Image (cartoon, rainbow, N blue to C red):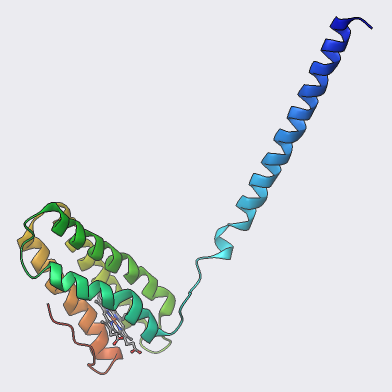
Amino acid sequence: MNQRIIGSILLTLFAVVAVLIDTESRATVSAMTARTTITDGPEVVEDNMHEFMEYVFQPTYKRLKVSMAAKPEAKAGWKAIKSDALILAESCNLLFARTPEEGASDWNKYAVSSRVQGAALYQAARKQDFDAATSSYKSMLESCNACHRQFENGRHILSP
Ligand code: HEC
């Protein structure tokens, strides 16, 4: 065999190995995609409502209360408001996975209004508009409290 033939045999072998490796890695990717389809999640991690509010909503509300006490002087203050407003607004979506059997439509109504006002607060903070932010913040807390009044017998009434 001359060198040219050996060379082309080697090249062909390389090509075959490359195709095999590629097919295998694609198979791995599609297997991973299959494992992470929507049927595997999202899932409720903490199904105890008390713990959920205590660790997701309460610290966020406490931070926000401090940030909203006065108009932020610097960008960092607005960032803090934006962050907590977004966490609260998005967390309201997690309340739909926790709707109780009794009073479900009221529960969902309060979750929606808290989310809408939380989103408005987030947008106002993006524009650094403190008046609009203050009004959305107060409306949001009224919606939070509306749920607490009905489902918590008026415990946990939050103040701005
Ligand atoms: C759809 C109903 C609902 C909405 C909306 C809601 N909460 Fe709650 N929240 C609850 C319930 C129920 C509890 C009481 C949980 C328990 O102690 O069993 C609670 C408790 C709390 C507590 C007390 C936690 C503790 O450990 O004592 C805080 C703080 C709180 N919520 C903050 C908020 C904030 C802030 C919002 C609005 C952005 C909000 N919640 C919106 C249902 C709601």
